[in-house]
Every structure is written in structure tokens, then in C-alpha cells.
Image (cartoon, rainbow, N blue to C red; front, side, top):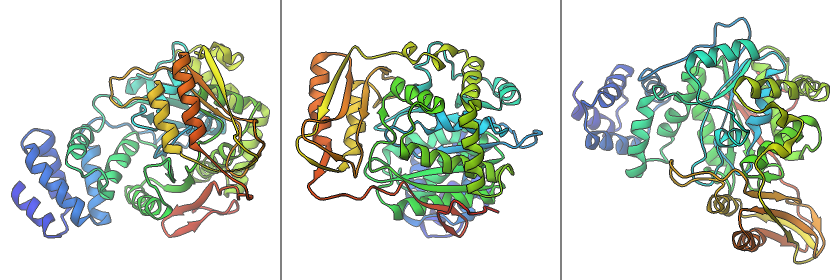
Length: 448
């Protein structure tokens, strides 16, 4: 394998075979290929694209570059879910224990927040003493005992992606679909799950701004998962407004506990959670179709089994389990200020990206890996798109760490909410469910 020839072949639009791609990536990870040649290769992929077979080969080369896990041979089914990221997206916190309470193992390697999207690990670490830094053996032991773990990627898992992603960031090749697919899917497939459900978000608060781009990415990831031998399904979900009521680390943990307890169950959070969980049950052989899966999940919620699984999960990872009974144990902001509707009318939309970035500015997220998170700060939205509000009615609450910051954020949140004098249709939460050529969303669908 001669690097120059590989770069030229891809530059000219030729299809590379698996051995060539594997050798090229391996040589780069080992330091035998310099950054400038890998940059040229990435730019060639950006302009010429990759076939499904090439994308699978690239993903495989990422996976074999480091440590892998395998949970496909256990005596119970395993399934994981991955989200492309959004504002207020705490679905993993409720979905993982809910599905695990149905007897499905949920091995979940998650990430930290970067940019406007929150990170599952940061949210969980707002629970006192909770640990996300687990060894592979600890992950396996927890999965066997409790059917669940949520952990950080180990330092030796998928090193090719870490090294190449840093280069993509400075060579303007981040948006390449094959490179996005290889990056996301390598991490999820390296964890060894039996099946995978993807929550691909679109809208002004998502990385994919429209349904068409989200569909393209979804199809590519579904193809790679299925070709790799892991049954994979994608749901396209709406991120044109914050998901659920709360945005912020400890606030989203609070909402997740209240959801599992049955105290509050926002319609958008509930519908998407139920859909993702139902698909996981279908792929795991627990349910015959999505509708049956929903009934099983609802029974686990109402019986309290999902909440108890969450408690077991917290105990297993060293956290304070009393938080399940008393959410006031969570870090809380010292200041809260309401945001009021400026007129009578209907909420017509949100600047969701702006809300996410304001959260980062307040300390709820990070722009660099070494930024320190403030788990206390964030927002609560009391009304959503399509709701009618009256002038002076509270529509949101800002939770801040100091008075000047909070007052400034109240003004910015007020500006992020849009109004209409005319009725506004409530948005559709789920656009499509995609498995190979299936493109619809049907609660009675059977996913074979």
C-alpha cells in the first residue's frame, strides 16, 4: 500500500477495497502516514464521497484500531441507542433504565457536551458521587448484573477516530457524510451491542438542519450497521424546540427522575422515548411490533420497575440513590427568574440553537474539552410551540448562578421565543422510522 496511490485513486473517484482502506488507516494510527497525507485523503473523500462498502470498510478500520467489547453472546438480548445531539435531550437517562427493566441489556458508551448540545455523562455526573469512568470488565459485570451501564469511552477504544476527528476539524471536512458515519458508528459498534437504534435529530437546534440531510445521514448509518451485522434502525426526530421542559445538567436529571416517577411526562419527550424504546424491544425480540413495545414500556413505567432500575443503576455506578426519592439532593441554582409572555398569542417557535449556546455561556456546556461544567444552571420551558399564552403569563424560568447573569439570560430567553397572533400547529415529533428501505412512522409497524 502506497499512500500516494491511495490518495490519487480516491481523488479520481475510484472505489477503494477494504484491505487498502484498512492498511491506510492503520498506517496513519501507527504514525507511518503524516497528517498532510491524511488531510489530502479526507479532502478527497469530502469531494468524491464513498460507496456503502467503502464506508463500512472505513468504519471497520476505526473499530479494529483499538479495544472492542462484545455483548452479543450473552443469554439475554442487548440493544443501544445513539442520538446525534440536541437541546434538552435527556432521553438516554429515561430510556436506558426503562428498556433494561424489560429484560434487554443496554450497554451505552456516551459522550460529554461540546458546543450547544448537552452530554449524557455531564448530566449523570451531577448526581453526587456518580462515576462514568468504567473499565471494560466493570461494564461487562454491570451489564450481566443490572442489564445496564452508561460509561465514557475508554482511552483505548477507537483511537483512529480520535486522531482523525481532530484533523477533520481543522481541514473543513467535518460535514462529510461517510466520515460522520464512520465516526459515530465505529464507537457504537465497538461497544458490542446486539442491535442499535439511532435518534437522528433535525431542525434549528440540531446539526442536521432539515429532514432531507437527516434522512441522508440516517440511511448511511443504517446501511453500515446492517452490513456490519448489527440490526440498525433510525428515527428522525424534531429538534426545532427544546425537548421536554428542562435544559441543563442537574435539571435534566431531575426531569428524568420525575418522568420515571410519573410526576411529569412532557408529550414530546414521552412520544420519542416510547418510540425509540419500542423499536429496541422489537429488535431484541421482546415485542412483535412498535405498538406492542409501547404497551410493555408503559407497564414498566406504571409498575415502578423502570424507576427501580434507575435506582439500581445509580447504586452500581457509585451514585447517591436517595436522589430518586428526593431530587433536591441534586445541585440547585441559587437564583431563579421567570420569563413572561409579552402579548396574547400562540408560541410559533424557538431559536433552539441560541438557547443551547446561552446555556453554554452560563456554564451548562463547554466549548473546549477542559471547560468546567456548572451543573446547576439552565432553563425550564412552561409552554411549547402551538400553545396559547396570555400577556404576563410565565413561559419559561431561568436558573442562574449570579443575579447579573440571570437577568441577562432572562432577556435572551425572551428574545428566543417567537409568537403569532394566529393559531400555530403543534410540531410533529417523529418524521420517519428508517430501516433499509422503510420510510414511515407507524406504531403498528413490524421491523423484521
